[in-house]
Amino acid sequence: MTFAFFLSRINPRQHALKEDNPSSCRNIKGRMSRQGRRRQGSIKILVADDNQELCGQIAGAIAQEPDLELVGTANTGLEALECIRKHTPDLLLLDLIMPYLDGLGVLEQLREEARWQGRVIIMSALGAEEMIRLAFSLGASYYLIKPFEVSVLLDRARLIASQKPSQVQSKEPKEQILEQAISELLSKAGVPPHFKGYLYLRDCIGLVARDFDRLGSIMKTVYPIVAERYQSTPQKIERTIRHAIETTWDRGNMKLLNELFGTTIDAERGKATNTLFIAKLADEIRLKYLS
Image 1 (cartoon, rainbow, N blue to C red):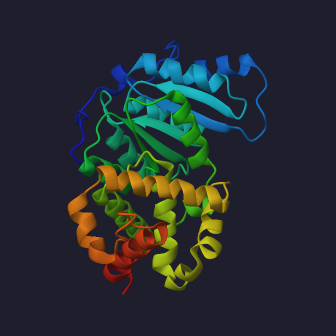
Image 2 (image 1 turned 60 degrees about the vertical axis):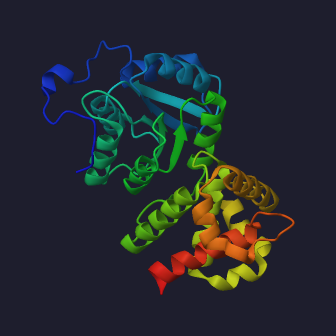
Image 3 (image 1 turned 180 degrees about the horizontal axis):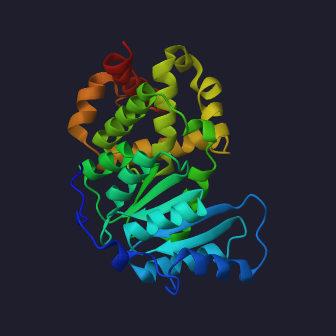
């Protein structure tokens, strides 16, 4: 059991979803259907946050996007679970601190039920490394630290939802452990988890750790695979990773970075190249989990 913030016992009748609750999934879905046509294949989103003002801001922004559809909002973890069961959204935008059942409790329940196959983006003011690792270990796909621009949130929503189902479903336990280990190593190094480059680095490191021969021509053998996953280009992948690494060197865990890279850093650049960064972290993963 995690150090969740929710109460262990509640009155189910007292906290059950009410049909006349304006934040319930049913009323939101009806209101959205009246706003206009949605393109076939739009991303269905559920927003779960106890801040009703923030929910309203996100809902309003989603209403302006033809490729996104809001199926509902929830202000407690219990409401979030009920909405997921009713409407099976593609993506859950989840706050960690909510009444009755917190975000971690929601993630735990979803993992136990093992029926919903959507993605989860955590929205939280809690930026502690342990909390981020815990959220990822329970199945979160992305962690966005508050405050944030709603436009950035929707951009990340599209990015996460664009990943192919094969990337997130039916993974072997060994694969889950490997991905968690890579996420933990990136977090320890200080790579900002709300950067796109965090996701790209995670995938690149995983690919190289499983097949080190890819490192010989990373632009031809690694970036194209990651670009296809996120509907991007190898050049954009390279630039975004570069930005994440440079930010990590400015704000990250220098003690760990020095331990990992030592004297291998180019004296003129003062920071690891993309290839060196990926190679070093992939090697750490290989030694601990694949040897």
